[in-house]
Amino acid sequence: MPKYEVKQTAVSQVLSDVRNDRIAIPELQRPFVWKTSQVRDLMDSLYKGYPVGYLITWQSVGAKLKGGEVAAHQQILIDGQQRVTALRAAIAGQTVVGKRYQKKRIVISFNPLTEEFATRTAVISKSSQWIHDISELYSGTSQLTFLRKYFDDNPDVDQGKVEKSITRLAGIEHAQVGVISLADNLDVETVAEIFVRINAKGVPLSSADFVMSKIATYGDEGRNLRKLIDYFCHLAVAGHAFEDIKQNDKEFSSTEHIKKIHWLKNQSDELFQPEYTDVIRVTGLVGFSRGKAATIVSELSGLDPETRKIDETRIPDAYSRFGNALDELVRQTHFERFVMMIKSAGYIDSSMIGSKNALNFAYALYLRLRQNKDMTEGDRSQIIKRWFVLTLLTGRAVGSFESTWETDLRRIREQGAAEYLQLLEQSELSDGFWNVALPQELNTPSKRSPAFQTYLAARVQSGGRGFLSKSINVAHMIEGRGDLHHIVPKNHLIKNGFPKQGDYNQVANFALTETPINISIKDHPPAEYMEWVADQISTGELRLGEITSHADLEANLAENAMPDFISYVTASRYQEFLEERRKLMAGMIRKYYENL
Image (cartoon, rainbow, N blue to C red; front, side, top):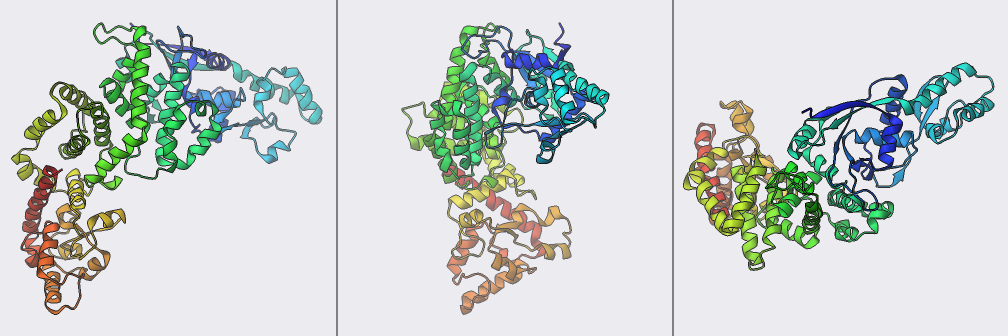
């Protein structure tokens, strides 16, 4: 059976189908991302008969039209949303949603003498030779009336040329656009795969876009759920936009949803700023125990997992579960409590978290564990923090992580969260991991290494100080964007047999160090500058930092996982230093994890 049908459809028919809800364009409620020059170029291409790419649609089972009735043949426009929105703006004179969520016009002008399209400007508006707004030509005014007015305003023009140009302009409505209609009987997984493989101007569409398109087909309820996702993500980054949304989207502002995200107006924390892909994943896990976009769409489409057939009676309940899960996700107390848990584990800055998916699953798990009224918040917090760190250290959020997530949730449901976590720890965090695998993970020049960032989190959580600092702790240095400096200086290593960046930039050779201390160290190896510290302890005369006692120095070196032979290290003992420090860093991470 063919998976799709290709046909040519007139621009006017496409616009009519959108206007009558036969084609759903969820992007109409989101900021229009095209530049006005792109709208101009689209009209120019249609005028000249150039191809403008294909629109791709798929029938949405159970879609609701305005007023609540179910559409038997409504199509989701899964590729071509910006192009159709541009056509509506230029030809039908429809407004688009601006960056501040205000409705605005994009007016395209046309010069019949030069056959040139342009965005309307003040200069063009004063010129009689330009048609100031081409949408007026398509608004019902006859072409003859339009020509008479133009000739009255420009009596000396070549009327034949103008008539030919305007006739050609009017013909854009009848220009043919290619539409690829995906077969109605395709299963959701196949459509999702096709969707993800489609390229829009070289940018792959994500599977989350597919879910968002599906959500928006469920009448007013679906459109508002989609807006809730969009606005939540936008406000998590730019809370100041709340008043713009409230003022410019009256439909959404009249719903209860606006109250759910009001708190983001004054929210400025940057640790966890979910994008709509993240929100889709978390909501799917909470509402359906599903991590894959295709399976979320299957649920919203009413797919019966046993018969593998569509059962439209399942759709209302699916949207209700999705909406309830979304409400839990955006709730202020839940979101802020979760972020506080992650910070209490030492991850105080977003730069320390290399995997957004680790955050996603941890948040989904937290929301699900909240449903267990017999679990204390302390137990819940311990499970979430351990799970999050375990995920980062073992890479459970990479590869086919959605399948892993679904398996985890199933086993948590069967065995209990604490019990299943303990099994994972026994299998994945054995002595071999801590003593062999983890030190090897620290054998890297990448500061983004999850193992190294977990080491920094351990330093934060323990309240440790910077290298050779008397009072400045690591947390303050990270929050102040403090610098990581070489313990064995870079130039010393280059001059003594370690010229490669991968050699001198090993993470085991880095420590958060106050800039004045680093400047004083310059190119001197530890064997030299540690002697300065010993002298200042003896004399009380400060030369490197402010430590003036042996006990304080020993404590600081232990806090920074420094080998006991640090005072003798030069390039000749560099490899020995790295190997020993990696073991000490891994040991610190283990102690940190076990105390979470």
